[in-house]
Amino acid sequence: MAHVAVVGGGAAGLSAAMFAAKNGLDATVFDTDASWLHKAHLFNYPGIDSLDGDAYLDVAREQAKRFGAEINQGEEVTAVTDEGDLAVTTEDGEYDADYVVLATGANRDLAEELGCELTDEGAVDVDVTMETSVDGVYATGAMVRTEEWQAVISAGDGAAAALNVLSRERGEHFHDFDTPADADEALGTLIDDE
Image (tube, rainbow, N blue to C red; front, side, top):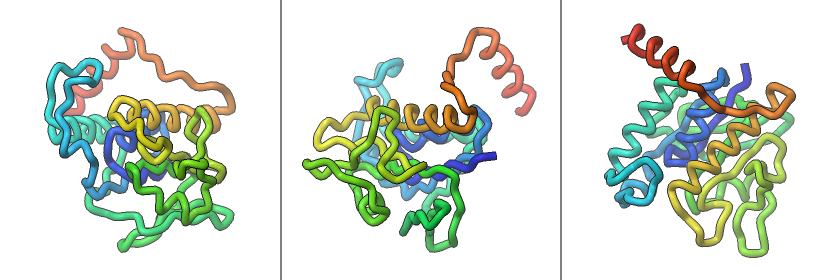
C-alpha cells in the first residue's frame, strides 16, 4: 500500500491525510501543532457557523484518525529527500514515503531544500493537482500563494493533492464522492467499532 507522508497538521495537511486514508492509502501526518488556525475563529468555512480554530483542529484530527491516518503529534520534519525514493527525516528517525504532501503554511524551507521550483514571487510552483516539480511531492496552502491564504483554500489544496495521489495509484481519475448508502455503511462501521 502506498504511503503518503504529510508534513503539517493544519487544514491542508489534515485534509490530505483524511482523503488518502479514507481511500485506502497509508497516511502519516507530522504535526508540530503550529497551524495559524490556533489564532483563528472560523465564520467563513462552509458548513461551520462559528468555531474556534483550536476546536476545528481537534475535530479534523479526530476525523483523519477515524479514517486511519496516523498523527505524529510534536514530531518535526527536519528534511525531505529524493534520492531515488522519497523520505522524511525527523529527530525520531527516517520514514520512507511514496508521496509527500508539504503543508507547512508560508514556510517554504523544506520545499526549497528539496529543489522544488519557485514562482517569480517566491511561492512554490505547483500545477492544478498541487504537484511540485519534484515527482511525488505536493505543496499546499500558503506555501503556493503569495498572499491569498485561507483555511478553505488550504483544505481544498490538501484534497486536490490526495485525489491526485489516488488517481496515480489507481491508474485512472479518482473521485471521492460518497452517497447516502455509503454514509449509512460508514456510520454503521463507526458505531460497531465503538
